[in-house]
Length: 138
Image (cartoon, rainbow, N blue to C red; front, side):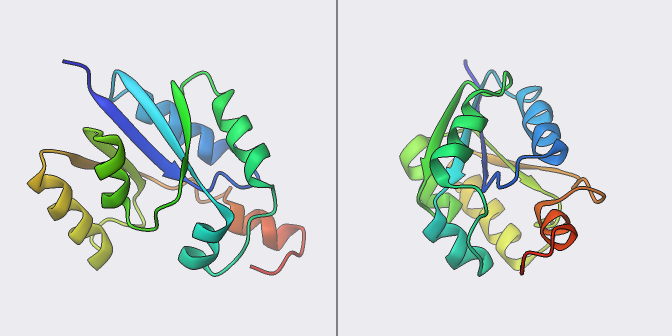
């Protein structure tokens, strides 16, 4: 049986933290699909627009050797992404672990036999930190 993993994200200002998540995710599945959220999804979820245009972000993610497929992710609710893609494992940053959103997502995915694996954030490098460094309002 092929294990399909799903790694959603904005992947804005692609950095080592993004690469680390995709590398680690690929070690836990046979096929890795990266979902790149659209500008409107990022605005709804994080209250800000990305710096790098969607078309460039998805092309960057497609070129990463750990990624088997990169797809647009139009969903804030990652269970809706499961309904479309039917992945076995969802990969998220550990900032979701223990939160109400994380617990709800774990429960909903668990009902359909999928699970969530959390990876640690790369604290020293994040898109938010890069925004601050170059003085772009978060």
